[in-house]
Image (tube, rainbow, N blue to C red):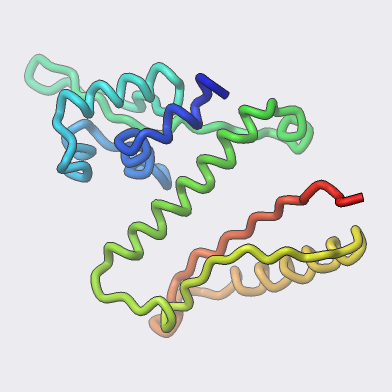
Length: 178
């Protein structure tokens, strides 16, 4: 994984650039610089170029402005067309997808923490790892139950009483001990 995209993105400036482009955001250099006020423009351009070369970001639009071209950047979307295609991804492709997912989580959490007055307990903030010992049948039943609860909650329409919450699930099996 010496030259993987994951290692490339782990640089603090490049991670902040990718986080600023999460959730479909399309930003020009000026807009990115406004979000990364501690990064000099020359450094920002250097890191943008590294992300472009690695196919992490792409130029999604070019605007002609008084004889110069303004580039608008977005995250390069990795589309998965079928479960079979997902299954056949390389180890590095799976790591990149997982890294994108976890980067989104970090960005969401950072946005929450930057809101100002927050109350982690009242807002229901939680993160933990639960080690469960389940047979395959018990695992399938648990996933079905959780999926049913998710789907029911996702049907809720927004109201003034309802807070929008991001709920993420990660399931990673461990190697059996025997």
